[in-house]
Image 1 (spheres, rainbow, N blue to C red):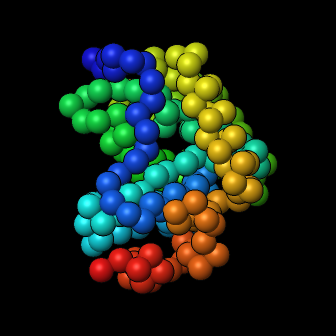
Image 2: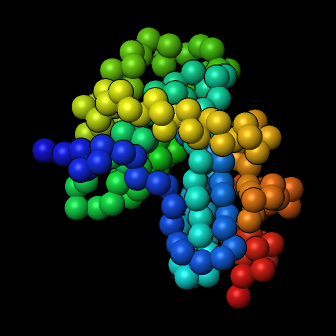
Image 3: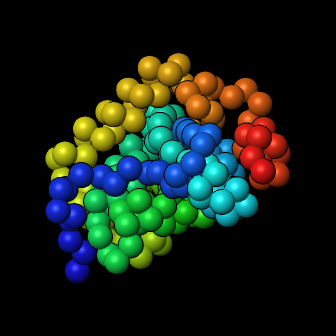
Length: 191
């Protein structure tokens, strides 16, 4: 059985410990965010964790109709300790959702078979695909503060669409989800 961590707070979605600081704003059901997310681990591996810090910010977007449920589930996973850090549980949930994205998105953002899914079914599906039971943690009332924090931070930085990349506090117009990891390394001036 999973337990909430001692503080009941979501674990920050931060990997690495070097400079520069790359902040990536993702929407958890967006196909372009999925492309960007899948490059973060290879980027950290190639750049070395001491040469780069990556922070993920989740930006729920209303036209992705299950977005807020999925976003809250990611934060819920980050509060669960299962032998891994909460942030790694959150990463596992993101990977599960991005890998099965069509089951968390509507056709043309408004129709299709997912129209009949309930929020409880979406949470159960997330738990099933990720192997992390987010159901109880999802109900923690404090998670709405984390959702507001991520939304506020994005708005304060003028970010409305995903994925958006920010390097050392400045939005990078050079980086995109369609680029290879080697291009990101070059843009970030990493060795």
